[in-house]
Picture (cartoon, rainbow, N blue to C red):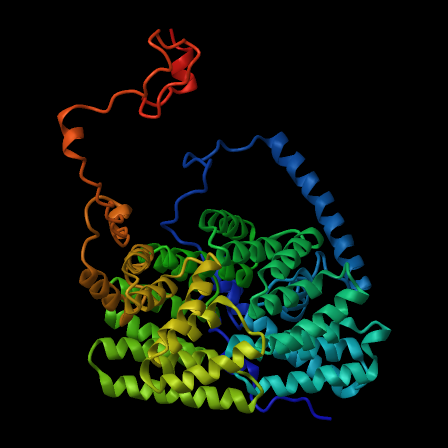
Length: 571
């Protein structure tokens, strides 16, 4: 069974370093010539002096000659031994395949060039060793990673084929849990989170201390909106696998719960401790996303630029950079960054963002072109078994048919895809379809997860305003504008307009914002007193005899009420 790709993964590998670097020269002799070339204007090394030393004495010269002869003999003997043994003087520098394997073993991402080398190495190996289950599992998992990081959905079928061949050679029950983990990763990449959950929980049941299963479980639980299970899986992963991968997952967990300070501190620690370029770039990209969500576009651009300098193949940083450039009104640079991102990583969400940017600039023709590309990408993904319904529904709700968006998202909800993103999109689609009362429940659910997303707050505020719930509407619209004033080139101006239309809250605080209390009931009319009673006040009840009333007698009903216990105790 052929598992060779139809497209060379190296077609999108990042550009190699310049051949002008003597350490990267293709000709070994040329490299040596460059390294031996002396710059006559070069400064001396730190600690060196420009004053020439005095000439050595005769005794010193003879001693140096003797030492040199002995040293030459030792070096010659060592060289002969080295030639005879056929071994190098130092440890071998790891190649791209070894680097990719080391990254996988550590739970970190490999660079695209190293990942390409690993795929080519395993392809050649399984051609001559078709029953090697571990190599087939490694190849299948590498295909999944390549498809995810290149947006080439054709690799999903190749990944599934390789992983199934691995399980045929050695079933999962006989110790081939890595193939099951690979199938879980494939299901997550296709947005089939229920299948990923089943595969992952099967592995966890058999190998509860295998750390490699927990990242796929975290992704599955997050896609299903099960925050409790995602939190437990993240904590377990941190117990079993210390270091940068655990810090990265913990930062993502805090971010999803709206704990900004904790997310930022953990993400910074992950970036500080990352050593490999791909791992470092991913950590810097996370810092850029956090800065963008806080409404700090300059900081976001700086972090995305740092990620690209660290690893030119980290293409998501291009889209993040474009998003932040829009907020800084650097529109031409943003358009170029979006176009580069789509060329390197053709994801439908990037096409939607670029289309909305064109639309905000009045370039409706260019916007329609991007929307057409979005539909084509979604259709291609569907052929490869990947579900991009969420992105398509977001497009339909704002630029197409809201009723179609509602149907797509209801199907997601029935399939237990109940993340904050799906809840927000469904609530907004229902509002756009004229069902604001029903949409309110889903929009509130998205915001109640705690995630700090300006778009979620904007959607909820607009729905509340439609339902004449003006106080909460004003509060959520203010939160959207305060969280990230430029969260969308189309929606952010509409959020400010909606907030201005609501006006300032009435004076007096929240109490005056509530509906007025009902008027008190009218008092019953008192009967008119008789004419005799008007002439003199009513007298106390007559005593039984002409003597004074005894002190023990009860007061009359018209007497004033008794004082309170506290007043009775006072002197």
